[in-house]
Image 1 (cartoon, rainbow, N blue to C red):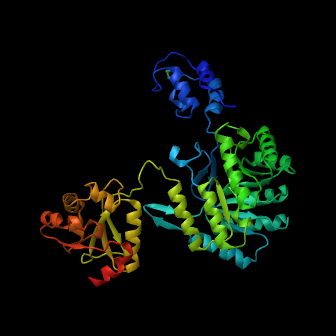
Image 2 (cartoon, rainbow, N blue to C red):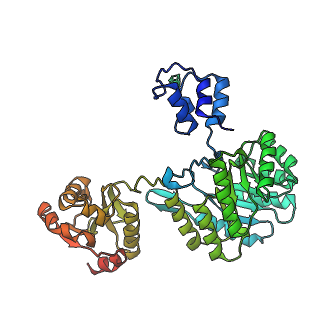
Image 3 (cartoon, rainbow, N blue to C red):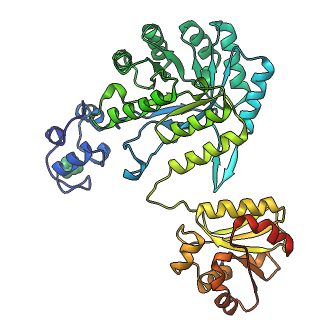
Length: 446
Ligand code: SF4
């Protein structure tokens, strides 16, 4: 159980030296108990007390590191029920699925689709990160060969799904360099799977139906010394699976019920054969509170919206999504290409650059700092005025790159055109369309 502030205070040095940034040891203890301070901030904690306090100050949902071929992702570590309370930190991992029941060609197609799903947007790389490998018939050699194929053909993190410990061991050995997640430990195989995960030092998925059975299972596994668990409530009906996500998150955060203090695995792939429903279910679990979602269908038109949803859910709601002000080249512009300007609200950039790209007319897109406000809001707040746009045009360096002296401004900021022409006497100001969807036709008409 977590310690209270007073219990933590009793273990501190009680010198009130302030080196932790708090005025007293008691204030530090209270902050630590509520998860607002880091234990490392106090340099006077003995190793013995540190171990005790580390447990008390640990996040209520244990973060688990997931290894990709290059780099590491983290799931768990969340501290709030609702993102507006603070923020959600570690985005849901999106996983594709292959099974030993699939034909070779189907597996190859699935892996090829997975590798194609990489998008660069707003300076970020959006992509699924994991492949789940499921054992359909208990054949250890076949399961290991499939896991090896996934490791050879993708850079994905690998999740092994079999209830047979010998099959999981064979597959884990085949891809040991990739540090796979092992699964699935159930009440029936917990001893063997727990021992295997402990021996290999790898994260383990624990699955049991019903809250009591799940709590018993995680208690047993943690009693064996395992720490990195991911839990699966076993529900494959949307209503129950959604309820489970909420119950598990609330139990982990509010009473700090340690047996549920782990990230969760959700499996839309096993909930429906309809690709559209599968994506809708995945969208539910990305919003609340899946650590991993496993999907059958890896078509771009289904995955891309999920990547965007995830991007939006896992951002700090107190900070607008912004992109760095500057000059952005859309489609290899030349010195004669048109110049357009807009604000640095990420969604604005996202939509405008997408429409310009779609027009196939290479364009210099200059992005002014409006503190993340959209065009209309920035204009109304005086952050996208004739003065400020002119100042930015002069200093951003666009005159070194573009010969043209015509600048396109957003239709919603038409009111700045007069001021802008006064400030930029060498430039002609064109008022662009109000709606981004009209940008391609506008550019083609120039
Ligand atoms: Fe107390 Fe440690 Fe903070 Fe000093 S640094 S005030 S000893 S908690």
